[in-house]
Image 1 (cartoon, rainbow, N blue to C red):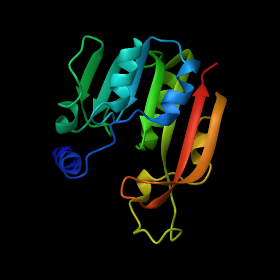
Image 2: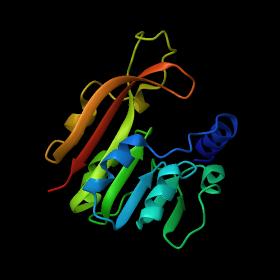
Image 3: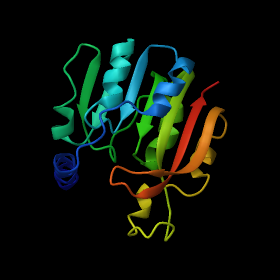
Image 4: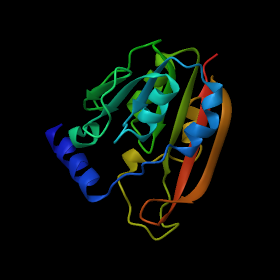
Length: 184
């Protein structure tokens, strides 16, 4: 865990993360009842702050204490400094789960169980793009396969799903999968 914490702290120091709210979250927030929210791998809190400002009580989870120190202190934000490889999400607790630019397959089924009836998941992350854009191969454990995100949330009401080519923070072309789904 300490090695992961150091790696993520260094990453936040060297490559500042975006401060703007995820456009996917902002676009589909109207589908969510304000209540309890979980921001998985919240980073410096761009989505956490947005949700708290809307009236959500937010559990903001990240392994980087450097990033969590940048999440504002608020009575509506619960900052959790933890290793997501070991963390378990409380069942039937959340009206909204946000997962942007992060993949931990172990947590996907827990996310579905953690949503209350009518709860919504907003999930967006990278897809394998071997050789497509002349990028170095990264750890495949952290990249989705084609249609994997959609298949992972089968059984939920899919509000939106898309796989597309986009540009990352370094200006490189990447593949992204985006999903918004509601638990019925």
